[in-house]
Image (cartoon, one colour):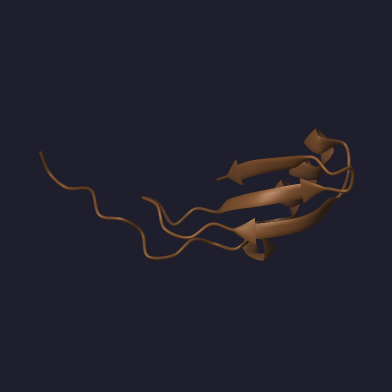
Length: 62
């Protein structure tokens, strides 16, 4: 079986398009007040741990 190479870096939350950030906030029902980018993985897409203004935490990836 061929080995799948890992991506070296992921896009941070700040680089996610504004429309996508707004969509995630709309789904949560509150603005995003915290974001921690997750490194590593198998794609260069974003992977972020997010916190909404109401304290709800989610993992979001593109």
